[in-house]
Length: 256
Image (cartoon, rainbow, N blue to C red; front, side):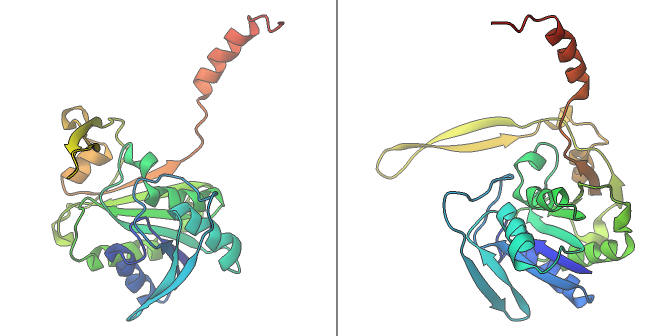
């Protein structure tokens, strides 16, 4: 397959290089276009008020292009300028930190895959429930094996597969679960701190109240060492509310 590989942790990230090694080693033609710096939690943002610069990166057997932009910039630029044709597949990851529940909206990893899906390219977002992994080669080989075995023509148009690995060794994983994303959101808080000059600053933190999480949703299953996969779609219209609004609007006199 011809694969566009990106992420939001930056072109030097461990997970990106692990996927490149596994995919290229299996014979796929892999085009790496990733941010030069970490772009976690930038969501679906684009660079429109500054130029995008590109740098060639080559380290041992790894090569790719680093962009001075967001993950979505990487996908857009690759597909509309760099590549001669659309790739067969877009893979984003392996991200440090799970992307489950509301994280999906914040995630640059998922948004890069979403951008590909919106352009009609089958897309896969990959993350691990750990922020400082030391070796992701086994997870990367699992991803490559799945890519080989799955019939990507079966994935509906403008859909993304969201894959998360648990924070354990692959031989300790309890298997894979297809599951919905949790609908429980973070309990956010800000820590007030002080810089060396006595000026205040604020640091965002948050936690998901686990006692509210559906045990069959991604967050709960991942915590129990299951690999989770959730198919995502991005048609956001609430048709039920639309019907109710239509009834209300028909009774409103729209004359000034």
